[in-house]
View: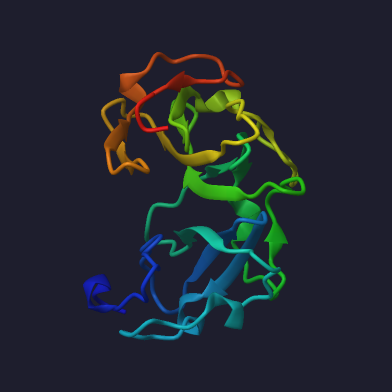
Length: 216
């Protein structure tokens, strides 16, 4: 599509990412199960409606979903490395290079989350970036992104934040800008802001600092 605002969304659905590129270039989709699926822009059906299920292009497991996307158009900036974080608080860094050629419908592994866990997102990552994570019970932690191990092959990664059994990571941010932020809405309708500059930079694997006690 030429204009993202022209598309329609089904109830309960939302836009995850918007990437651009020529019809001859590739793009990569990262899934919650740790697989990277690479296809051509031209193979994604053009539509101003609801679009087609991504399962038509790739072979997904039950419950598997897309958590990130990156354009591979050589005319546009591309990250050398990326970071992924799971709902159980694990994180890993990996290079983009092995995931640039068109894949099979089964994709290629970039991570192997353990049973009961899944990746919640994938973002570009540079050495000087800060990684800010927050759980559903509003425990937030900010650490240096380079404390998260870069894996040579797919694995579960290392602990970024210790998550209680009844909690899970809700969102994260990876950036060099301390003023960058993302907004979170609590179960009671209150808006909280996660920003690397708002919290002290600590070592990874801590339990984090509670942002709000009133909402849970």
